Image (cartoon, helix red, strand yellow):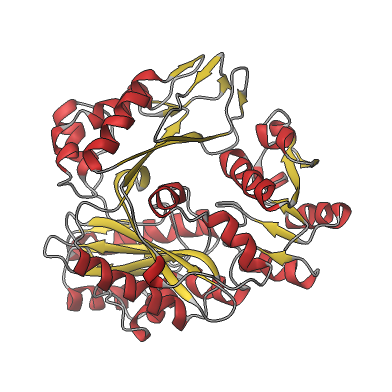
Length: 459
């Protein structure tokens, strides 16, 4: 087992990793920016080193400073969390070149799956269904238009190195292609330093279903069931649940087998997530594979009883999975709400500032993952996520009721959060029915008058 770990991240995921390390007897080294001096992970870790100023490009994205802290702290491994450098192949390679274990897959696998066009090709080779689309990245707009006419409109342009909805443009007809292609290229270059674009057939009103993968370094791969992530705003997930209300046992088996097949074909190692779109006819299509722990990993842990972060660490230390696919069982139903420092009444404007009072209720069937506390100053440099509430019940109805109760009892003062908005969603009859797609919030805004940004949705 590892003896000492550097956590190359911040916020709630850093706190979560520290908790997993404590249970495994691993010492922790936190790195932090000047803006995060009062962050909870700094106080909970065994040691902490400041690596730069507030903006991420001066701290959490500085590979040199993180590796210098790792050498100074004499660590065995680095856990990248999610975001920042978690899917950066160069960082993974540099860690291993320094003799430090990177908690995640190999650099070559990260590079292959991080390139959305190459990941699509990998899915095709593994006989995983994909949507019709371009023949790899589109070099010239004229070639793209010719291919788009062959596939048929509408199509969705995507950045090859993209994520989070950036560099994505819906093209409804040929007349829009050149304009939207140019905009997508600019967005991709600005956000990812890579202006390459590919496209896929646009799928109307899909569900977003992702399968959790665990794979050790000895060729053993299994899945831990699915999460339904269809409740999204501007391509960002708000609510996740497991299992999905849309899957039966047969479809779950087919999608799970496809996810495992893809992971095996890539010689995947560590925790990972294979994401699919599911249409109304029960047909599923590969979307992408995330080579890191997900924000929403907790719902899978709640229904399976398997600690994903601990297994990431154990796999990084060379351990074999002691589970077979038949041993994985989902018991009950879990639902997660992301609590963000945003003002829903003001176009979801970020809310940096000081939390004067912070109370999220616990109790049977409730889990809180958060780095926030009363008196905490929220920096303006980073993502607005403050934490997550996860509720588990014997079935979906029970889990939703537990979550409604937890949201009603939550008290956060000093800033605005998304808690009131989440309560409105949980009171919505369509959400309660489980019959929704990724455009749920677009329709919800029409019914309730919320400012949600009236964009079509497909990740």
